[in-house]
Amino acid sequence: MHPPVVSVEKVLYIQKLIAMRDGTTRMSEFRDRLSALPAREGPRPETGPMMPHQQLSQNAPPALQEALFDRARALRGVEVRPSRVSVPGARAFVLPETQRASPAMSMAGGEFAHLHPPYDGSLHLALPRDVGDEVIEKGWGEAHPAARMGLIPDGDAIPLMVYGPRDEEELEIVWAILEASHAFASLGSTKDRST
Image (cartoon, rainbow, N blue to C red; front, side):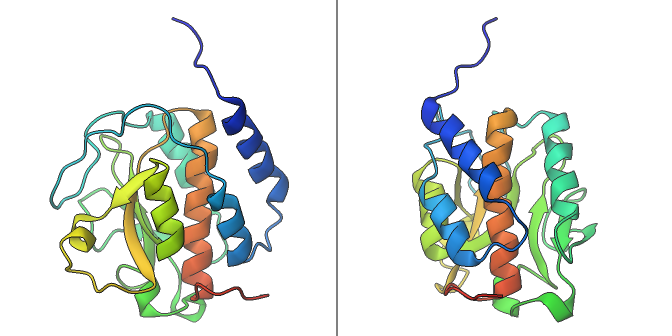
């Protein structure tokens, strides 16, 4: 077995992500980061077309799922709880009421994202529509079926499935997408704020 080939574009993007992390990132900086997303390599994984919306192939190795979980639970203000909207075993990332931007920025009760159980490894989260469209276009995720069916009002946010990371390089990219969701849920605006 040969080691995976990593594109120069992906390496440069990951280096840029690491260099930009300082804990005070504004939504405009996340937009800049994610506008330069490299395309995800290979075909999209198979996913269930309806709810529960699950990733069925190309699943993230459990160690990478746990690495993503450990990073997410360390985000400012995040509490980990069982998901109120996903399958049993999904772990939700929740912002307390005092840190939530508005109910529209989360799925339920401040839950801005959740990581599916180990047999799946994908996550659901919300992003500003323009950022979410970029994630979809570059192959890192897809719109939630409820959004595709028009069950979720068309607004500033789009709920997405982000595919689980298959390797360490993809972990950095999926992590950046999750950080952007946290910033969006915390800031509550698709417009730049300085705090």
